[in-house]
Length: 74
Image: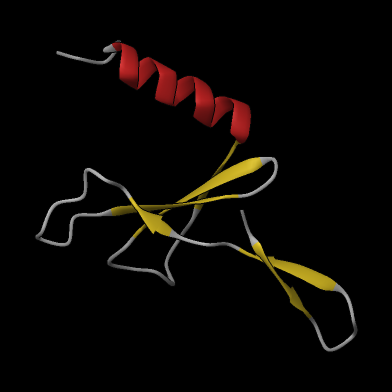
């Protein structure tokens, strides 16, 4: 889950914990993800300050189940 940072004004801001895919290869072609309470974040590990894709947790769970079932296999 996300770590929480406290801002100077005392409010809290979630700081995602990024982890690489177990299917990442050695040439830097990696996807990283971070899990929040209600969403999953995805980014390119080569560009950590670049764009982030955010999807609802339910959508991400459905996608992973479809991958595991072979739904997208050629």
